[in-house]
Image (tube, rainbow over all chains, first blue to last red; front, side, top):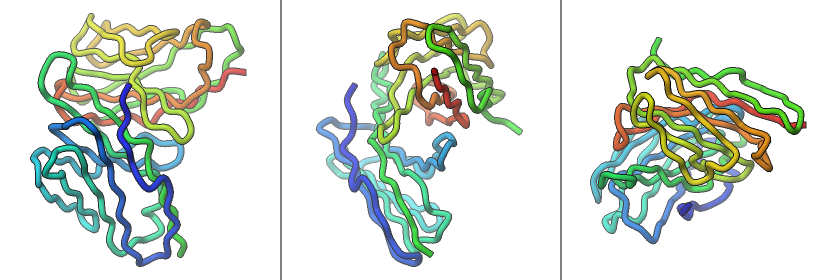
Length: 114
Length: 112
């Protein structure tokens, strides 16, 4: 199945720095989702975006649904050690039939040095 | 508390044996999913179910089987036909196919 292009693959930053990661696709999505996964755990939903151009915040996290509907980015401000983990983007088409499936990026591994 | 539970957390099996992974949800969600995750990879869909007694193949269904006899439960069997079964398996559910999916804690299967 198709996968999204998520970048960067990994990031090593100092505590307090801001972080930005993004996902791009050759196909249009109706919904963009951002999940965080801690080691050995299931992904946890951070932010859901439902409308092109939408900018949504959740605490120190901000995500945007690209105008073209083919991309999305996630920003984390003032990073802290507990931000460590793998961040996944996922796109979903809601046009009915079999076009419900989530398409996942390969993830961005974030390491925060205290 | 409402949520998705998967058991066991870690599972070890000998090559050639079938093994069944459990997934239970008390969220009253109609749809349930099974994903496979390999190191450095995104999640890949194995099977999904929209409603009780109905399920559909995902992108990598070969070597797997499922059942959906109850709304709350969606067990996955990894058969001996699966050529590379060692992986992290994640179950998810949502109210309907177009709604946000929520994930369980996962089961790490190691086939020796």
